[in-house]
Image (cartoon, rainbow, N blue to C red):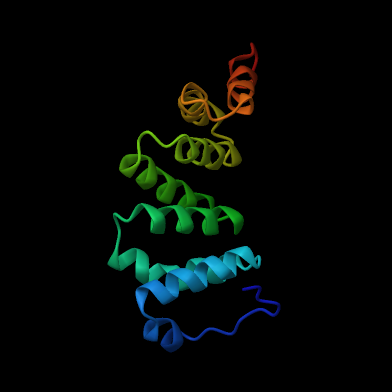
Length: 134
């Protein structure tokens, strides 16, 4: 479902949603480019299910898209703990660290993603960090 206008969400509306309904609505909001609203709708679900990988991924994506880099990093860190063999999760954490100008820390996760076969870009990011003077 595409959401065309910025939704008006009250805390009462969000609290009244069932967890699955809130998760699906947050997916729609993120797809429709309302990441702040998606994170807000997803917050109660994340509190209810803090170790759910799907919730962590969606929360991380919403925060990253909203440029809330600290919360995005935390969500992706939790995701990498839950799914240590996920190249996507390693790459996402690396990108969140890169956007905070923490390239050295991000390179570790890009190396892991490259080793897992994520993409050539991950190896390129590592090469950029490893250059002399970087």
